[in-house]
Each structure stands twice: as C-alpha cells, then as structure tokens.
Image (cartoon, rainbow, N blue to C red; front, side, top):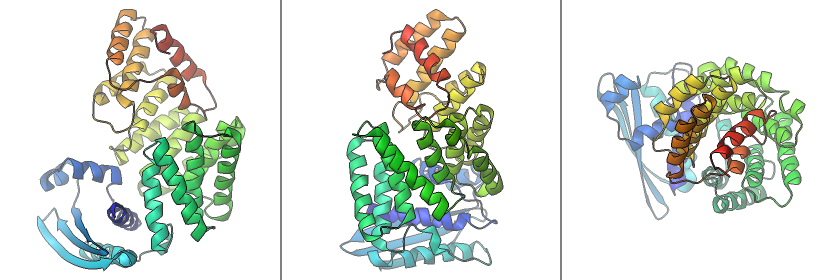
Length: 383
C-alpha cells in the first residue's frame, strides 16, 4: 500500500501548484525535508515555507486510516487536524477532501480541483501507474520488467489512456538504455510513435512528450527532427515560469544540451537547482558537462567541489564528479594531479566504464565532448 502515500503527496502537490497564490515546494525537496527531519523553525527561515501539511497513513486489511495536520509556520499554530477512515476505493474522494481543506485553511479563494490531473479515474489504474513509475526510476532490469508488466495490465483495462502510453514510451527507451532490447530500432520507433501520438492527440504542449520525441529522434540519428521543438520547449517553460514542474526544467535543459544549445541548457539547469535543489543527481553532472562544453573549467571545478562526496542515490554520481576532476586537471596540463584524481576514483565504490559514460550522449547531436572526455580518461587507464 506504499502507493497510497505517494498518490496523496503527488495529487496534493499538483493541485495546490495550480493556484497562482501558492508556491509549492517540489517533491524532491519535500522528500529531503522529511528524510532529514528539518525543524519547523528551519523550514520557515531557510526554505521560506509558511505552511506545512503532514499526514500519517496506517493500513489494516482493506481499511486505511489517514491522519492529516496543517500547520501555520508563521504563527506557529496547527490550523487543522483531521482523521479519516477510508477504503482503497475511496482514495480519490479523500485526496480531494484534504486538498480542499488545505486551500480553505490557507485562505485561497476560487479553488477547484481538476480530475484531469490524475492519469485515470480508475483506482486500479491509478495504483498501478504509481507503482510503474516507482519501478521505472530505479533503472534496474528487474524493476524495468515489473514496470512493463504493470503497463500491460493497465492497457488491458484502458487501452487508450494517453498517460499510461507515454510512460510506456519512456520504458521502451529505458529498455534500450539498459541493454534489454532485442531490436533497438523497433523499440525506439515504437516509443517515438507514442510520443508523436500524445502530442497530436492529447497535449501539444507537453514538455515531457516533446523530450521523449526529441530523444528518440536523436537515438535514431535524426538530429534535425530531434531539435525541431527545442525552441517551443523553451517558450513553454518561459510561459509557465514558477508554475513549471522541476521535471519540465530538467527535460528542457537536457534537450537543449542534446541540441548543442549549451548556454540555454546551462541557464536552465541553474534555474532547476533554484526551483528544486534536491532533484535527482543526474542533472548535476549533466550541468558540469554543459560547463565543459562552454569551456568553463573553473566554474565546473567549483561546482564539483561544492557537490562531491554527498550521499546520492543516483548510481555513479560521485564517481563521475571525480572523473570530471581528472578531465579538468588534464586540460590544464596538470598530469600528476590528474593521476592523483584517477587513483582516488579507483578507490571509490562504483565502477564505471567508458561505454557507460558514453550512453548519456546517445541521443545528442554532437558527440565531440564525450569522445574527448573518454579519450582523456583512457590515457589514465579507464576502459
């Protein structure tokens, strides 16, 4: 039943973020706050958060007990505390109740909750979709297969669900990246078709679908097509401003980087760090790569030293930072320092390969940087 907590969190965040009066903390930052047990005083002073919404969920058989609390951090008082008893089939109803309660207590007028924010009004689909997403982000073969099985089960129930289909498109691409595909081109073409259909038939302005389309075109070597929508992605992101999701910032930065728009990519990553400082760590070393492309070695070194040796869940992040230091030292003709950095990399827990590093640029228009990066690392013994 872990999907219940995720579902409540996602729906609450999405619903509240639709209101221009509210600036909702990104999910990644909320997770960081929860994990590190940050005090209310620090939430107010460091993160400028005025309200917090907390909930605990207990499950017994088919019964769910949900306790929620809304705290006004400015006045240091609990302004609402409710306990609900519900079943799995009543999840949507109580998601909306808590969102309504939050909006009322925070004095936001004219609120309405759109059912279109959910991937489906079917509780079974809703549950399986969240589980499929959770399996996908692990980036392991076993979890990939579990996610694919859930996709099949959802499409049997709702064969025309565009949200499920789009997730399927990303999973087909992941299948290729994980080396599980028996027919690389066929899977990428199928994923590309899903992205195109989503854009033409469901949401022409979906940044996520544009990123899926662009990356698939890039993987097929169709770089002109891959970069045809990057300007539109930038426009949409600019129009949404503070209401754009952290994922939209990440996808837009990534596609700009793939399309050699390194300055825009660089600035978009920096905006992402301000919007969501705890976004999954891959964006941090992609940001360093964008600095390398702009020949900003000093900036890259400073960023690495500020961010290395932290606890990242994303595989190989600290190792990649260390390899980037090797690259910087080599470019400065500091051979002995580069050797020292590489020796330190060899002592780190995760072993990477040149092919693994190159995979990050599979959809990129230009392979010039990554080939140079790999050539430099091979000098010091990387294979």
